[in-house]
Length: 116
Ligand SMILES: CC(C)(COP(=O)(O)OP(=O)(O)OC[C@H]1O[C@@H](n2cnc3c(N)ncnc32)[C@H](O)[C@@H]1OP(=O)(O)O)[C@@H](O)C(=O)NCCC(=O)NCCS
Image (cartoon, rainbow, N blue to C red; front, side, top):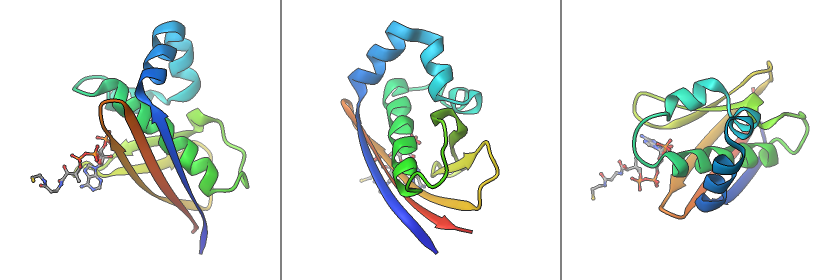
């Protein structure tokens, strides 16, 4: 059963500023170590982090705050084919369908939450 949908857009420059100002504290508050490892190298570092931030916000919207979650309890990873997926630190009876896109200055994400 679909619980809800969510969408979010993030300015990449804002994400970059926060990371440059607040460093590891900010990264730890928002991201899980698995996410940081997944995108630690490679192009589009800030775009990909911004996209994950957008994904987390979209997921929070999609689950309608039914389950209170911290940003770093929502973990966005990639399948072998590159498609993003979400896992939660807590055990939730929720499955997330997720799509992400980013260009130089903006990142967006859309999520659908369904009860398992
Ligand atoms: C997968 C594809 C759709 C990504 O689109 P894009 O415009 O390059 O990039 P976007 O910024 O919109 O999307 C990137 C995100 O797509 C997601 N993605 C990657 N592969 C995916 C897949 N197989 N299924 C779903 N989502 C995927 C990822 O989340 C990625 O972001 P991330 O790496 O930070 O996690 C694209 O590379 C593709 O394969 N297009 C098919 C058509 C084609 O071959 N075009 C090129 C020749 S004209």
